Structure formats: C-alpha cells, structure tokens
Length: 163
Image (cartoon, rainbow, N blue to C red; front, side):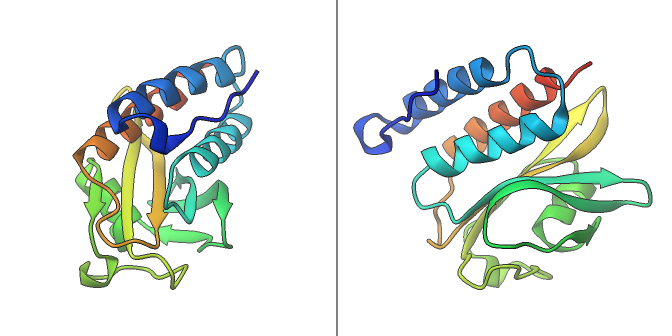
C-alpha cells in the first residue's frame, strides 16, 4: 500500500531514502514503462514540496524528446535534443540543475510559474532513454541532495522497466 511521506517531518536524505523504497515497491513486478512513468511522476508530485511539474520525456529517433506521463500543467510536447534544460541534459549526458531558469540560455518556458529545474537523464546500457524533469516555482529549489535523490529515482525507474 502507498503511504504518503510528510516532507517537513524528516530530513532530505531520509526523504529520498524512503521515496526510493516506496518507488521500488510501487513499481515491483510491472515492466511497462508508461505505467511506471505515470506512477513515478505522481509519487514525486505528491511527495516533494514546492514542485509544480514532475514528469518524463522519452528520446525518439532523430534526437527529439517526446512528452510522457507527468503531473502538473500542460507541457511542451516535443523538445529537440540540445534545446532547453531537458535537451541540454541529453546532449551533456548528465543531470542539469538550474537555480534560475530565466538565467539559463535557451530555456523553454512551458509553465511561466517555473523558476528552477532539475533534469536527470535516464540511461540503460549507455543509451539515453529520455529524461526525468522536475520544475519548481521557487528559485534555487533544487540542490545536490535533490540531484542525487532524483538520480536514484531515475535508476529505479529504468531498472523496473527492463523487460
């Protein structure tokens, strides 16, 4: 059974440990990537404070990211690799943490309320499958602990969808 965490009641490291355990249990036995992405984005959106968007973009042939399951306001459907924070994470092949999206060259403003962003590439056997994207209306919302925690969440998602 799913149990909601209370973010203010525990420190951030413990929050991410518990979130990872919950996600592993939530995805256990399910191999479908869409179903798992839907539950992962819902868990993140409901659990993490100060988040206004949590979701997935999947890399398609031709270097284009296609919108997947998410929670939040409607989003950009297609993003070219190299454009915006999501596209930068694909090209760099590493997570991108942006304290102020207005200062990020080429930022794509799908939601005008978003002020900070964390994008983590999902990689299997050296191939980028897509990205896990989190937005916040609060500048400086994400830090190294968030990055580490969300990288673990992305790894759990990728491992669960191996099939």
